[in-house]
Length: 389
Image 1 (cartoon, rainbow, N blue to C red):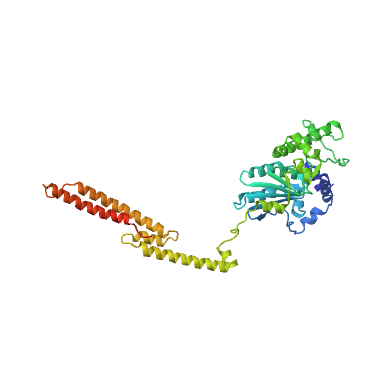
Image 2: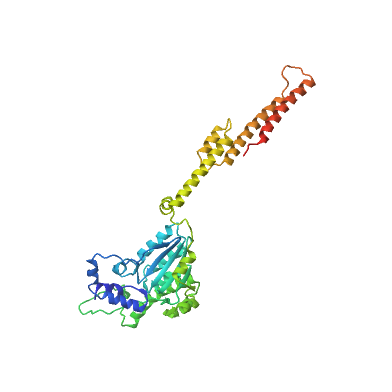
């Protein structure tokens, strides 16, 4: 028996039966590992390739699912949870992406690691919208992942279900092999030809299935019993029947889903260099318009705000393209008000002070106050006269 088959048998699977059988057939080709390891091959282009469409990120989950990358994920289009988690994090860290679509077409796969990834996807929903799209198969472990999204959209021919766990035990030729199990651990090697041994194996599989079903049910707002019925007790449901049974939310296509969440913007991937290269006429017109507006702004400030005593305000405005003539005039007026208010305060103090020279007649005092009032009126006239805008 090849090492690949031994590894498959030692793993619990949440996968369609025919897909598991296909994996056995591939693994039984005893030269596959050696052949692939001695050749420099390129990974399948569609395998685990993150795609961005504006603000929408798309993560494919295709083929059988394995916890770690291996020969099947590298060369046969299968999915590695190890790489899937990294790709999800790339989109989680991308501030330009606010919606993530899990593009699923998978019969399921290895149970190990599925729960962790599903929980991670669910936690991502706090910051971004996460939607699952199933165009082909969304079965077993793949459905476990899909259930962690906010919504499941499927094509009218998509298959959903196969909710459960399977473990395969093959009796090997033990003619030349002797195994001794520690007396404290009799259940480490249960005899599957006995009822007791089968009961032990069944309990292990049932425990894993219970976690799977309970988690998917909670994600979909169902009880475990309702999830078992919705999933046809481990069977499959297609298209509309899957929606009717609450395994999915609605029918649709991948393109329609992308269009639904993609935000149209003329600024996408557009910077100065791109504008200059791809739209030279628009760039030249924008530069000419900017130069004209700046010249007009500078001329207006010099003409209408260049007053004695306010040179620093004007100079500062000329070096800041965001400062308008109106901004400059407001600063000039504010400075005038501050200075005139100080002058008025001084005049008031002077008007209330005794007239220099000692004794004065009422007439002299009145003339003094009249003179001060006239000066105050002149200052007020300057304050209220305004500045031409």
